[in-house]
Length: 109
Image 1 (tube, one colour):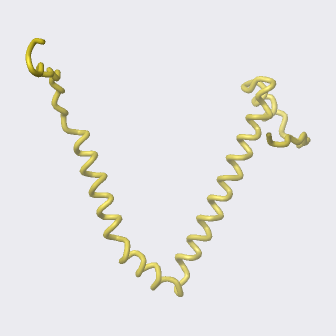
Image 2 (cartoon, one colour):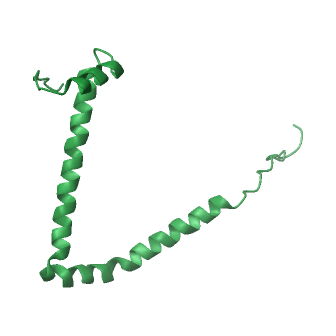
Image 3 (cartoon, one colour):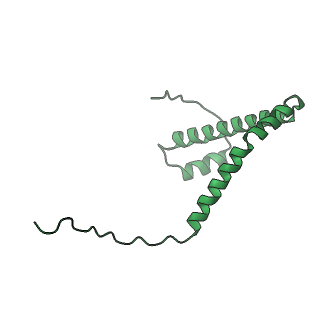
């Protein structure tokens, strides 16, 4: 079980009023925890995105990126073709299954 901490933060009164109007007592801590967690995860994604963009802008690594792209592009192309083929199969009407009748073996006993 995770340890819970009780903290006090100052928030605009209109935000608190709207929050309390829409979130029942007893659920507010959980909702705030989810909101903060989502906020932190978004910050992490933004930081990672910025680091990736910085790396892509790095001329020293450009040759490496191009080499990796050449090595793996056929895999990507093959995967997308397989996905496209699978999607086309879903678009085509499927024949209705015929009831299966099992033949009796060996006749009456």
